Image 1 (tube, rainbow, N blue to C red):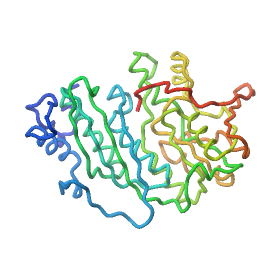
Image 2: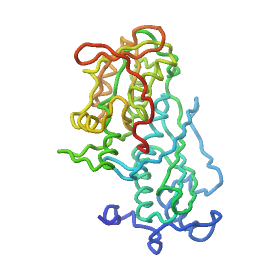
Image 3: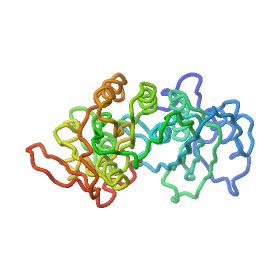
Image 4: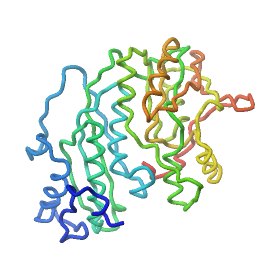
Length: 351
């Protein structure tokens, strides 16, 4: 489908006289100026960005600030359930949420390969704009660079986010304690398998869509409800296995999780088996793990299930003690094994 039919009437394709992004040597020139004004300026317009200054100036509520940055090199740029633009916003917003922060502002950096279709760029930009609006954040500054053809694989993005911390006490791995309950916010593995299904041409009865979504409203709801949260971690690269091992190492604790309780959809499980992957090692873009005090665990699950994104929230394990760092997985048949961190990145270029 032609891009202009996918966009709203208020979102016409700019620079129609330029079907592709051309090299702007030295970062200046008329075309680059038009690109900045008519593409990024038009899509991301807000009072702070519209000042067109070298540095954004903005006010923040009183309190501690949280800041995070991430880069996105996913291939393909568009996949079932999302695209590089929406994922960049979700990923940065979610990183702030894991610190108990309310996201406020984002920056965006675009590394564009010469020859990228203008329709592709505009579609990504509009996706970022719409996603930021839904997440309640503003894109207030950024940068654009065009690299020679063959040097950028289409488009890379970098986003930095700033938020104000609303948690009254620090949320960090070092605060995990024996007795804490391990909660997972929903089914695992869909993002990684959505990407791989497209790459490998896998066909299933129903398409596997990425779980890419913002989770900050869930975290803020937990905080406002007085849930004692000791640690949060989004389940991106390395999936649940990496997150649990990283937290166990930082907190010097042992934990036990039950395989039968960990939610993995049947089609995702089948796709993992076809590709020789473990769903617990596969990346997610809209899922997180929470370590909460035992007395608050049931209430935390109830609160999480009120949100569509975390409707499948469930308790999957417990911190069993302060020992040498270790994550033990109790299998479906009752046997126990060590759940190791992935030995390498199983699925490259998925975020």
